[in-house]
Image (cartoon, rainbow, N blue to C red):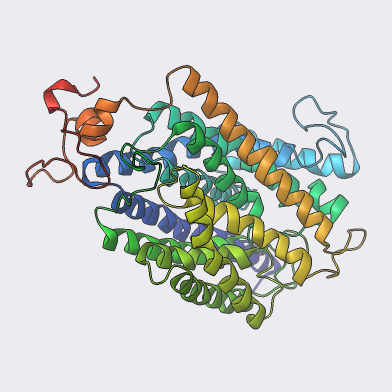
Length: 465
């Protein structure tokens, strides 16, 4: 085999690895579609699924137009330099010069993102990151089902999926990010930089959005609003689990010229250990949530994801025994967090904050305890608890809760956040689309989680033109 053929083969293997990992990550969105569609009541199933489809589309487009640039442009800002862009001196050298080269390849007009036989890898890296971004926005989608306006949701999903979490990734999941270079932050599986941001963003939004009609009784006690199709919800989460194997595989850095797999931080790892640890985290999470929720099916199936997220930040470093312990801890306590959110009068329809916000931040903090002192590349501080606290706090509060709460509050003041009471009682399928998700069945008065409120005749709630 000629040297040229060997070079091409090395590139093609890396290109194929990220391509198929990203394709398999789409299963996360098939899963979210089924999970949230099943979790909604039958009168909202189509609207919920359409919202998920639009998440994929809107975040995909906006991540292409500016999200990918944000990731490459923000790592040095604000402590090591400015935001890198067309205004940056093209003769810049050192770290700024290295970042500038990546930024120039991230513009939507860059040849690197089109058919370019001189660059086989930039496009598949964009593909993987776009799927990360869509996943982040989909976490918000479940929390707000059955009562948010599609326009408001679209704005919030774009802000979360193509900006706020991307800034978190630029700072905490980049070889140039200041969380890493200045503090020694470590978050292999994006526990805080993705899940923590999304979970806290969702919390800020649902506080302003308010609960679904009938979720709380006259004394403020929460009432159960059951999924209309719990088996579909459980199948959806199983698909999400499959997609998360691909998600974590896409977090591995595997490019031509390397002599082994590494993390984004340059630390060594193996794909084999990732397979072992992810499976154990999933298993221990299911057991932990089953025990913590006393067998509640919804919390139990969510526990698999909680276990993976809790161990995700250090899943590249942990021994299997540590993974089992941490995944069990996160998933066991997750139902209590979900219950506390409900008791506070907040309607998080699928427990997005408990699973993603709480477990994401917990997972980030645990690295600073369990893996404290682990050496990182030369010139980078070793893993330490202080770095994990600072990184997790910035992700959860500055990039998660505050923008979620602030933007949704503005939308609420403008009357754009929530659908009308009539629409909510009738259901979004009929009020928005004029069709029912299950047209072969008679439309019966809604009893699931509602007070004794008569259904508004469909004729009184005309579909939107």
